[in-house]
Image (cartoon, rainbow, N blue to C red; front, side, top):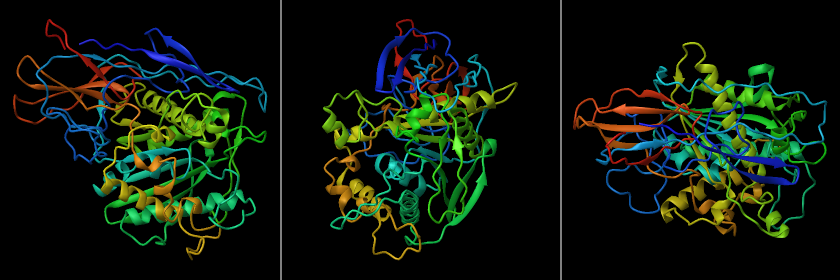
Length: 497
C-alpha cells in the first residue's frame, strides 16, 4: 500500500482570496492553509468500526451495495468490494499571508509542527462517542449541519457546540413588518444565544423555554467563556460562546483578518445578560490554542466544521453582497476562516497528543458546505426538510415571546415560516465538502475484509478478525498526515493494497 500526499495552497489578501496553484507533494509544513485540506475521495465520518451508527442525511441517490452511505458518525467497515486498492490521501499544507496593516507591531506566529508522520503510533480509542461542532455564527449548525446533528443527538451522542463569533453583525434584530430597530450588538448576540437554547431544548424533546445551566469557564491561556448546558436523561448539549467580534475596530471582517494579520488582537463582545461581563481579546495563536484545548478537554470522536475551501463563484458585487459571499468564493468569509482555525486546532491537538509516546486521538472530521447550498441540488426529502426547518423556528423565536432573556427571544428574521420561504434556500440541502462512501473497503489475500480510513488526521487500517466474521480488530496506524478526512482508492494490476 502506498500513501501519497498533495495539497493546494490559497492565499488571502485584503481584497479577497486568490488561488495559488497546486503545491508538489512532500513533507507537510508547519501551519495549515487558510482553506484547509483539499482531497478528492470519500469521507470517513466516525472514529471506530465497532460502535453505533448514527444516521447521515438523506442520500441523493440509492447507495450501491458494498458501500457505506455518506454522513457523519462512527466508521464501520461493511460488506465491501473484492478489489484491492492503493490509497491516495490528500493532506494539508502550511501557508498564510499577513496583511500589510497591523493593529499592533507584528511578531512571528508560534510554529507548531504537525505530528510525526511515521506509522505505528498507538491509537487512543474513546470509550464513548462525542460530537463537537465548531461554528462561525449561531445558526450555522441549524442551516448547514442538520439533520446530521439531530440524528446524532437522537442516538444519544453528547454534543458540544463552539460558537467562535458573537454573531452580533450590525446589532439589528430585524422584525418583519415593523420599523428598523436601533442597533444593539450586545442584545442581538444575546437574542441569538437564546434562540440556540430554544432550538436545542426542542431538539432534546423539551419545551423551548427550559432553563439551562449557565457557567463561566476558564479556557487555555486564561481566556474565559460562557458555557450553557442542558441535559435530558443520557443526552447532553453544551454551548460554548467565545464571542469574538464579527468586525475589527477598522471595520474589517474579524475572523478572516485574524487568520491573515499576525499582529491583530480581536476583541470579544459581552452579550446582554451573560454571566460573563468582562471583555477579552484573541490573537491568532490564542484562538488556535483555545480550540485545541477544548478538543483536548472534550476529546470528541466526531468533529463537524464548516467549509475550509468553498467553491469559486464569480458574481457581480451587487449579487455577491446580497448573497453574503466573499469576493471570488461562494461562502461567507467567516465560515471559511472558522473552518481554517478548526483545521489548525485539529493539527495542533494531534501534534500535542502524540508527543513522546502519546497516542493518536481517534476522531474524524466532516466539513459542510455553507452558502453554496443554494446552488447545489436540493437533496433532502420533504419529511427531513420539514424537520430541519422546524428546528430553525425556535431559533428564530418571536418578539412577543416571554422567554425571560433580556436581550430578546431569538433571531427574529429567521422565525415564523421564513426558513422555507427564504429565496436563498440554504435550509433545503445538506452537502459535504468531501462527499463519498466510508470507509474504503478491500479484500485481503487471506479472504478477510480490510477497511481503510482516516483517524486523527492519519491513515488507518482495520482487518476483519476472520473471513466472513463481520468482526473487526482495532485500527492500525499507517501514518501520514495531517491528512484531509478522505482517502481515494485505485486498483493495481499486481494485487497490492
